Image 1: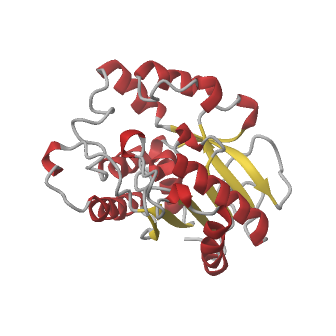
Image 2: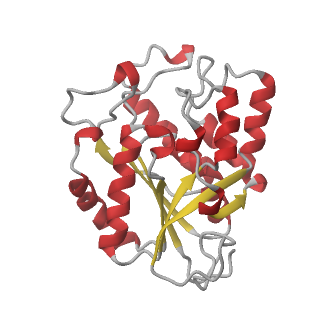
Length: 269
C-alpha cells in the first residue's frame, strides 16, 4: 500500500456504466489507489434481460445491489448513489418524468457533486466523453456536470474521459453491439488518446464485474446473443481501455501518458 494514497473518483449515470473503465478501476485499486464511484441513478428504467429475473418489481433495488457486487469484484469502495431517476432509452424514455436525470439542471447536479470532491479530494476525475459513449442522454448529463465540476472545484489534478478509438468503434459496429451508431462520430481520433492501458492482468475482475449486472447481462442481452466469433473479438478488446484528457492542472510530462497518474509524483504508472 502507498503511504500517501492518491484518489480516483469515477462518476457515471447507471449501474453497469463502470464497465467502460472497469479494468482501470481494478488496476489502480490493486496498486493501492483509493478508488471511489458515484452513480447518479439506480437504473430503474432499464430492461431486464435475464428471464429468471422477470418477476422483479423493484428493478432499482436489484441494480443497486448489482452495482455493489460489481464494486466488490473490482476491489473498489462501495458505490455512492445520488438518487436521481434513470431516464431510460427508446420506448422506456422517461420524457414526462420530471425526476428523470435527463431533466435535471446541469449546475444543480454539479452542486450535488461538489461536497464529494471536497470530502474525497480526488486527484483524478473520470467520466464519459462528450458523446456519452453511445449517446445516452443520462451519460451526456453526467459528462457535462462532471466537466463543469472539474473547472469549478479547483482541486482535482486531472479529468479523463473513457473513450473508444474509431477502429475500436468500427469493430463494435461489426458485432451489432453499438446499435448502428456511426463509428466516426462516436469513436475518437487516435490523436486524442491520452492513455491506452493494458488491463489484461485484471480481466477476470472486469468480467466478474460485468457478470454482477445479472439483470443486464442475461440470455436476452446483446452480449449473450452475439455470434461466437464476435464475442471472442469483444472479449479480446476488453483487455485494453482508452482515455482522453478532459482537463489538467498539472504539466503533462509526455503525450500520450503512461497512465492516469503519470507525472503526478506517484510511482504507480
